[in-house]
Length: 317
Image 1 (cartoon, rainbow, N blue to C red):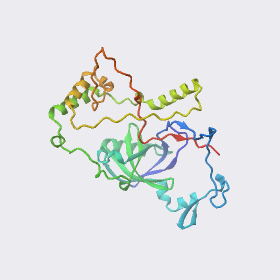
Image 2: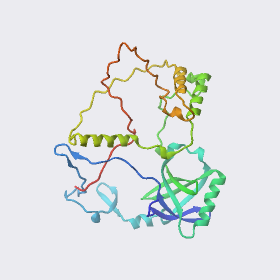
Image 3: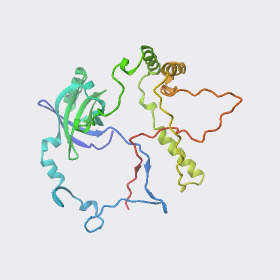
Image 4: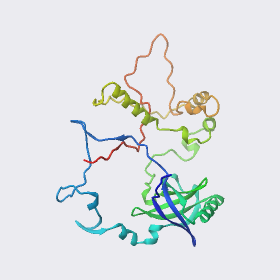
């Protein structure tokens, strides 16, 4: 847990106030890539400058302002932002209790740990055990960094975790997505296919052990870095290869055969996790007399996360 609290205040639970401190519950492990000028490979820095004079501005000379007209601003200090609504900036106000299953995962954003501050142990424990016994989560509002967040208070083991939630207006509609029909019959799924898929899931089921999962893509990139250093290619820009043509899509898929192949790869409970994906057929072996030619396309070892982008280090210009 971080040594310094990000936020201090209280949970408002009816007429009960629970003094708490908020700590970050996550830590990022992104690749720390620096932006470079490709002409001489010097670091590219960030510069805060006055848009009117073009001169650099130090942090001590920067204040916040709200633009109420074009190029007209109201200066707002941290004290102004606090005085606008003192209670909102110091209170996690529980407004309702709901079933956890009623809140879709798309609404969850960032988790934070809540710990009781001085004098709050008993009431903290009371709320925690109430959430646990009721099997519900508390829906609350809290102001952090000039923004009011909707959040969920969740009992996790011996902790109360505050998880910020997205507002309904932030969730994009899925109506335009072309999805399969909602029923098995309309989607063309047979009872046999469903039964075999359930068997595959059962065979791959195991206890949740988060420590066994790690960022293999980052490890592969760092391995490539070491390889380039060893080969003396630190300033070599690798040209992109021609992407292999995508396989032609087909609606005719022998799901039973794919599922049977997947089930056949199981070697005890959980071993199916290493099986080939059930959406891709295993290519047929070629005769020994005709060795297969080497493919020019190199398969990617791991796919980069769709939403993640390398984060460039912010270094002074």
